Image (cartoon, rainbow, N blue to C red):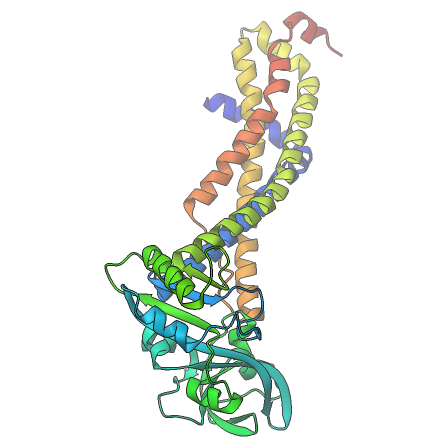
Length: 403
């Protein structure tokens, strides 16, 4: 086998330019696949970590509409305090926390922009845990009970929503009332959080005259209870309370596990399509290797005849050309893996610098790297089968006479 490797490497060295051009399609395809898979896996790992922090025993209840939370005006779709009371009575429910969200003009230093106002209470803090909420802070602290004139602002207000960014101890104005900033959220990556002002829910109700409404309700399930079973019970109780039939609910219920599964399914489809598109260049690269190997067989016809004349068997000729085509694929794969890793890391760093989010992270597991190398070697070897068979089946006399 070492002799075959040595002969194959010598043949590739003698035709350097052709070898590089042949490998071009392979390493472009491998680079694209490695970059897409590693970024996709990194994004999935990051989102799964966020769900872990949220907890697998969480249930989300909202209006059955695609509108922005808090923008629903139809009274039949609005969640109310009555719904919260119904949910509290369900066996297995530990904490029920409703929160409010509305779009509104926010003023800072005589400049007004449209943002989101989010109202929360102690149940919301208890549901997620003080430490979990504090982890999301770039600076400052959360608003405590009784602090009616204190708020937390999202990253966009701190960064670029206003000409001069909002800082701790600055004051923002909402509905003609000033609020002191005591906390700044880190960049989350969605407009609802990044463009938001967070305040106590009772203050928001008073300012906007919202007597009985919840934009969304979060439920923490007690230990020892299955979130799926509790969610089904909540659904049944809410239907009875709201006088709705099964399948005609005006609300939606999802466990954190269901949300994560939905994300995984959608993301898997998107990733498969992207990888499929990137793999087209691997097919093109394989055709390029086949073309090169056919040319190599023609150029080395007399060499093949000489090897057969001195005793080389058909199987040895076949193996020689298969090793050579496999090496083209493997070397192209090695270069592609290097480029792919560089691309993935570049996107990760660029996204963090430009967007301020760690959502795009490169996950460079050994499985991805070795899988890409094995795949490129297999593509190369398969592409060389027909040319290798042609070389192996040559008659020595005809090969020696070839001009």
